[in-house]
Image: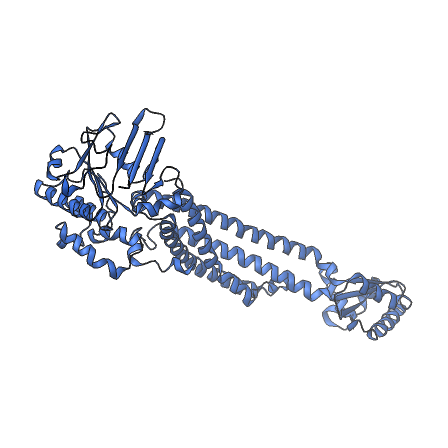
Length: 308
Length: 236
């Protein structure tokens, strides 16, 4: 590929190169700008989905459903003690009543207990909420692991339900994954649009320089020699446009990142880009250039084949 | 004497029209000098196009340098074209290149190193009387100067065949004679020359040159050279 850029100056003059003078670099700049935004969105969604999945994959919740508050408390205590003794379980945390109240507060409103902590049992006295035990397992909470937990506490708390935490947020994860694939689909569509723009540009350039190409051909120039001139010209246009698009795209991403961070909301806050995502985004102009170069080569070679 | 070009029953038709060239059969020999004459529309340029591989015939056989040029693959054509020098009737200079770069073009296409082409191109510019116009673009040159650049470009690579379409059409008589002398010098070095011209008087300026005459797409052979190899020019 490097040989494409080391064409001697006199050969380069055969097909004049007007840096940023034609529409091509600007079209590529817009395409790369949009591609960078789409790719960043896709990568951010992918990372957010993965982070949340990873965090919840090894967590499970035990709900102890028992109408009698004393029996419920005793069953929770016994089950917690039993679970702490299992090699499968890394962490066991019985959620305090106040925390359970805070969890349901968005639906049922604040109680005095949740507000001041002085009358913590008031809502729990009125509604038979289950006791909750948060578990962190030493491995992802698959059906086998959950069954082991159920078996362990089955005799101590017959009404206990064991559920993986990931199940609770799976619709959100599913949505995030959909958004991720939509973003990557946009990247693919933009790549196709860029290739189409390059084809149009290469054909226009071929038409403009038809006479020169004819002369080079009749003097013994090969298709490869001629196509290299166009490849180089279009690749440089794409690189210039791509860098411009990358700079603008990165600026927008950073601005949006700052605004999202300011929101301070759980899943939204987990939307971020790791260093390797930035690395991938950084390669977008290079990939754009390679795409433009290959497309230009195929277009020019195809057109030249129609000439004797 | 081995033939350098051989045409057998060659016909050329553009699209669905009548044949521009019909049943051309002739042989060109290395180191010979041919004039191709004929009225406008007789098919001179079409015949030259077949010679410099810009066109394939509709029928017949063309052998060039001993190989079948009709069925030759596209990939092999550039190598053969480099052995042929062409002076186009409309010059076809690259408009954004200087006279120097236009003349250097065949050498650069052939991969000659930059340090090896400066001297021959400068010498060629001097030979055609344009030593002081090396950096001039075609648009700033007169018709005659452009023609001389086109001729210099055609001969710079020391081709085995030189095909020239009306090469003296835009130059004064004195320059026409100089250009013919250049062709003769090249011919003496072994290049086969084919010059298409309206000017019948040019024939007398090149002793021993053969004449091919095109009439309504067919070829006549006034000097008989197309049936038999011509005598070497120094004995003609």
